[in-house]
Length: 123
Image (cartoon, rainbow, N blue to C red; front, side):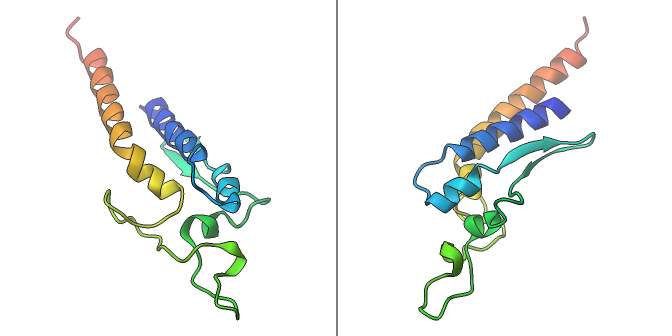
């Protein structure tokens, strides 16, 4: 199960890195997305010391400059709370979750069923 969780997170990270229609800053930030795993869970992590702007690139910014544009080239604030499958925050990670999530979830559930059949078969 731990490996399955990591593989699913890794597929999501890969899909995010190849998303089109992003600004240069968003593409750069999306390249920091990676799947990680511990003894208990798998997760998606993003950002790095060299790209500390990753969360701003994903969620946008509220603060504006004197000229009225959003700071640091970020897009307008889109929020940071999951809005469900129909819409919500984000410029690259969350849209990828909404686009790829249903297929990843279906594959994940099929693989869980397969693992369960193998583990609890009567043979």
